[in-house]
Length: 228
Image (cartoon, rainbow, N blue to C red; front, side):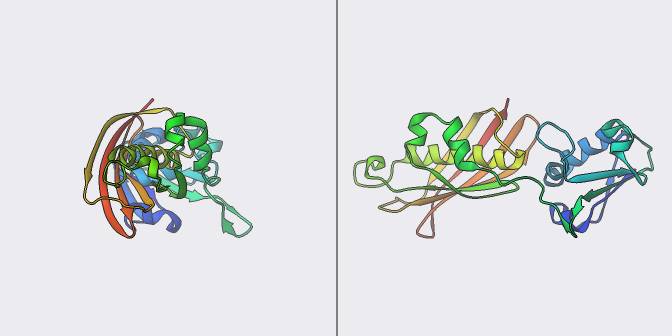
């Protein structure tokens, strides 16, 4: 078994564990592949969307910086030790990456009819995003309630922003499945749409989306995306 040592700053990504036991061996890449499969949140903190080590993370194999060895092709013995350490500058851990410009992603990558919904990105995190869908009479169906199609489009869009947040930027992707349940009508109120990734692999992403208005859940959706 290869032992992976997790620093305090990253232990929240693995349920507080400081040591992980990994079956894979042979190379550092194989070890990190298993880490990403079993602990995807930690994996995304170590490597970017291209599978490269993130700039602000150092990885040591048996005490040696992998970057001065053979990078991810560095050999790892079956009983080896891999240590992950965030870079430190000026006495504090450097930020992992610049803040995601979600509104720019909306402007640059979505069709005009989606942009006309007026969606704005409120917040993003390591594996989630919250968008605001503003109320508009144009989006109301007969009876005055917000159209279900608008809510579904918002859920779909929020998934793209959540995946982009996890990947550190926009990557081409396409919807494979979108399932929505509607719980109560939305009347004259903005809707907050929060998409949280439940699983993110190299080629597929799964998300759970909650839509709320005036503090109450109005709809719930799940999505599956293919990463191209």
